Image (cartoon, rainbow, N blue to C red):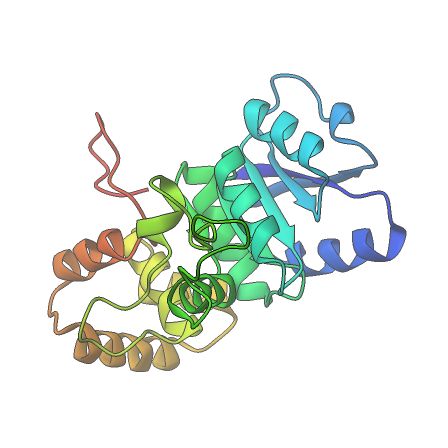
Length: 235
């Protein structure tokens, strides 16, 4: 269980984010404030920022586990959030399942980049403009994140394997975190039979069998990370 504090001044955005978070049974309490400075010092809350200015982003990431919501087309904002130390980055149009997964990962100390932003960064890094010489000499800056949490964890497809669909990725995340099929189904708002179907597809796509192999692939894909110094294998 964990607490969540949403930082957003615009009432409509505040209501929308609250509606997305409502129903997550792992959220112990949910509050909203107008400014990040109003988040109580020493709080264990996950702080959610909606399209924050750079100075607010840096201030929050230095003090709190922070989830950032950015516009879908804002590759620059995504990279800024990753570089500032955000634990998760999703779009402002994200589906509830991805926001819930992102919150879980932040609370557990991991890193999560929603599939939409991950795909946009990969496309930007490998598209026709990547590496084109910039005006005035030199090369245009890379659009993909550099070394750090964003680069290797933002992939849902090992080389030569089919990509996981968003629901499959969310299912794999929860199962790797130790939830049962029934618990994962309740978290995602689907039936246990559907979870079983997703896991069958995941095993086929990733060519894995047992839960240990699923967990290893979840770590490789950056959906969860191995916990150091503890008995729990992933976070």
